[in-house]
Image 1 (cartoon, rainbow, N blue to C red):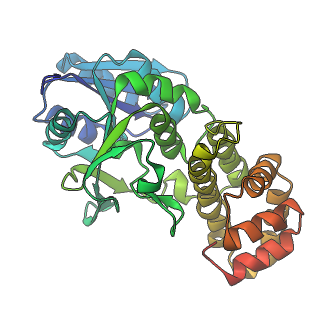
Image 2 (image 1 turned 30 degrees about the horizontal axis):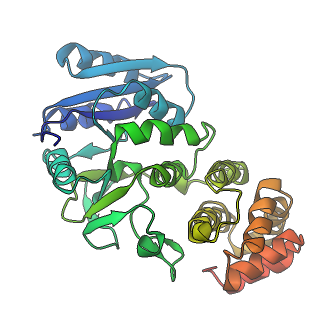
Image 3 (image 1 turned 60 degrees about the horizontal axis):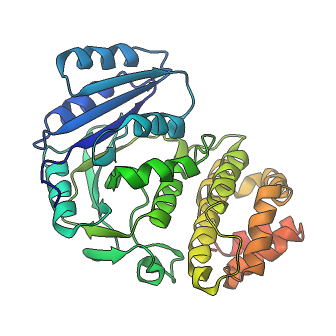
Amino acid sequence: MEAINSKLSIIVPVYNIDKYIGKCIDSIRSSTYTNLEVILVDDGSTDNSGNICDYYKQRDDRIIVVHKTNGGLVSARKAGVSIATGEYVAFVDGDDFVDSDLYSNAIEKLIETKADMICFGYTRWDNEGKKREVARNSLSDGIYNSSSYSVYYDEKKQTLSFIHSACTKVFRTSFLKSAVIEVNDVVTKGEDLNITLSYLKLASSFCIDNTITGYMYVDRSTSITRTYDNKSIEHTANYVDSSMKLCDKTNDSKLYLWDKIVYNEAFNLIKSDCIGCAFEHYGKKGLLKLILFFREMANNNVFYNLFDNGLKKQVFSGKRAWYAHLMIKKRYISALILRLRYKEL
């Protein structure tokens, strides 16, 4: 049986966050779980972040610093995972922080349940340092088989019943090293979900513990998931393309629900981080801009393949199926009207 003091590798991607990274590292160093390996991955920072990482390395022999050219969050996480030597791995974003008991509680639960992953909640803070809410998984506490898709897939909401974030989990390193390879480095939206889905295909079990909420997520207005830019379609398509590779090419009926999860989560990302951002950016007064945006989506090959194959696999239903049909027929104005009438697809 694994000991309660199994080594935990904590990976912190760092890019131009010199205002926040010190607080993040201090919180990890103050953890009551002391058998840590803290891997700070400086992803080509141009501010003082890299120097701050080096400063902490000199003062704590548990800290390892990797300096690399900028490649994005996925590549930074991969760099950390590739050298992790702990039995378990956790991720912390460099502008967040953690409660001192978070990892003691998480590792104890993992050892007790013998699960391959633990999913917990988090506490949301605003940019002014005020605590806003505690978020928990909608899935009840317990141990779950990773292949029991119907148990943790919410058919009504068409999404997983637990928080997507990679930072609200502790992973078994042996599975994670293989799982991260499946995530394309160019993914900048949905990368947490991509890692989670990839991991679920490899792991045997996971546990949920909603009493653990010690990950402190700081909600900053500059977060990439909340910001529209003229490459929103490209960014979303990168996730879709990467996640579709997790689906088997066979038509095995046992894998139908898995395909349904992957396809609908891809649809969810399009709905929120692509269509949703465009509506928030342009508003209904920018109707012409929205028409052009929907036309670009209809002409995107990755989106076309998602919608076309999703209809063939019959994983979309209701308004989603109708929307997918309109988009593959390039009836993007009708698709836009459908979205105007029904915010929730």
